[in-house]
Length: 265
Image 1 (cartoon, rainbow, N blue to C red):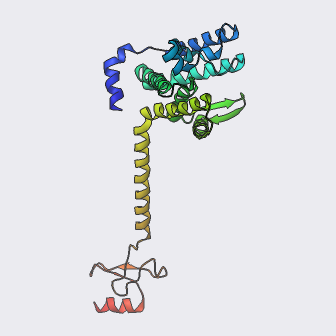
Image 2: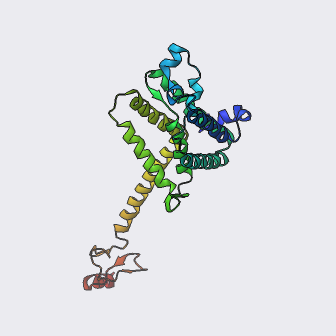
């Protein structure tokens, strides 16, 4: 997109290489704090009211420390997968564009926290937008679930999107449920910032292919040879052997009436 190109030209030198390493490092710090029981998740998540009314400004950064789980095995694979997809996106997009993707999700998350200051906000969904971006750009990459089952990342991306939609439709009214719904909206907004143009172009290309296919099929259904005398075609009378007369420049069908008419001509 043009706005991304403009920002990249102007602020590209400020981009942080290997940003995923720092994000993983933040979550590693969060894991240590939570496992040592020196702090709790309640003190780390982003809560707009606590920032505005209690001055707990650290929450603007600490919510990035929240891991999905404290299970060492799951954390290892989660960090590995996030590093792999982030590294692939950074190589494909460039450092600046990847930084803009993370920064966009971060800023949108913070903004929503102040729009609805009573809800609980985590980093789960906007970082999930990074996975959706990877699934869009590299749809044929294969992951092995449980180290055994090969699954295309395209399918995992669709399942993630469906899960997000179901979360968006969750009727819950609690602070956590509200935070999840807004988190999903942030994830989709972040994704669309970078892929809306591609999606629109894809829809237009599909429509053009559909129109071309319909026109092609319509032409295929049209008769290519029409008898000048009786109006028969290869479609209406497939048994006829339509011929082209080089003298008259007309087609005739080969039936007795057409043959006689042609001879008279």
